[in-house]
Image (cartoon, rainbow, N blue to C red; front, side, top):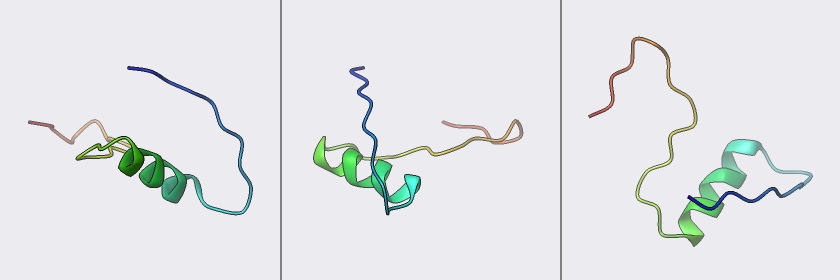
Length: 40
């Protein structure tokens, strides 16, 4: 995993994360997970 920091203004964090994920060809973006949520 290659993490980079970008500071941007104007758009929401969720939109920015989705846009970045699409640029890298990600199939799924997980923004937040509660303790009761099970992945798999």
